[in-house]
Length: 217
Length: 419
Image (cartoon, rainbow over all chains, first blue to last red; front, side, top):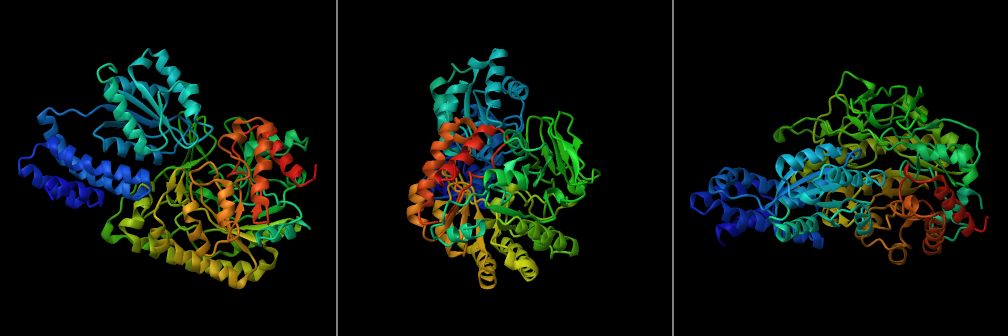
């Protein structure tokens, strides 16, 4: 196995310390940070995402793999900046106002980071104003909204209306997800994409950015 | 058949005279305080303040007159201790953000969050950082994860056991009184066993502790069965030892007045699949469930209820192996939770307590007729040959109109030939 394959496998098995060591070795072997990222860390997270969706691995395995990725990313970040490598795209994510549930949202964040996206996570109980501020500050491509409750999912529409009022609805794609959310609900509130789980959400995000690269900004 | 005979027959997989009906028997099969208030008005019952069962979920205690009106077959026996370390005593009135006045524990002493919401503090001690938060526009107090760190090498299982203890005199007296009151109603008595949930994420943050220690954040707890299984097993071992002592105390005092015990509400699944693998369940949880369930079956006639939300079908064989008799809430909208398939594959070995109507879509958003239709359909599927207690999927939430709840109640009566 090459060192990059080793990084991917170690990450899939959640061995954070080993991932960090291997990434360090790869850097010392003069492999570019972008290559280590794409063919090592992100390749490993893609496998985890596929296995998660297939029911072969579970929530803890994803969380542990994401931690392993973060140890490698910490080493790569300054080098990526030096190489002028930019994230595939930027996502602002959060659980809507009135809702404090964030496990699902965190999994989506991990999976999106595993696709090379820069994710600005605003946490839970986030107001429409805060979402708008973050979209403007970070020039985000995507806004990803989460809600777990039937009582809070309607807040998603409030956010979308606020985007319109702020004149930025056409500047971001809006993704929605969470326990009570359905494709029908997405259509009702005028969001762009509904995803049933974290792995699909990360893939849909990449597809959105790919299709609309440039046009989204 | 009276309510007890009806429930016992159904839980023993014999056809009862009619489908038994639960609403308020457990803290996970009740209604939001707002719904209880609205139902009282709907049925023309005298104005009365609703008592919160849980400050966290804001599930309410279903009063006897409302239970009578709806034809409920269960009565809850409730422990003294509650969320955020506040005993359910010295009740006082508190005004919910929508203006409804409800009874809450005397120690409940929330402080404003500055944005229209409220903070709850452990044991009502406002000098401690808040451990619960009800944001504005919300109807529940969710946990705030404590901002604590731990040294992996110095982790001590005792730190995650601080909130569990042998029932003291006041706790025992309170619980026995609650069993007696439930028994006096003539309905089947459901003991809501305190402290028996193994790794229930609602309790892991230690919201009732002034200075929680150990593994207390949700993500860290979820990865712990893989990263430090021995630690989790040691916590479960210690907790199980305490539960067995408490079970004996209760059984010795009033075991013959209890029909069902709800022990554990740990969720093992999300809507699309399991949180963890069946192998991890068998290794880390099952031995301790087995220990408690074996004791209950050897010493009582109680049936044991396990609650787990989500797409839990794949784990049902493990629940059965571990000695559980009943599964709740039967989240039929989750992946692999088709009612007819569940009944066919597992109906002989485990009873379904829930699944009666979808609480995410049909109950809050459907018409009364749509509710009626689904309830009748579910009763037909789950009710055959017993093994079913009617309940919605989990607590009925505050956004459900009283008309829809009444439609659910009436549909069960219609199916039972009582209308």
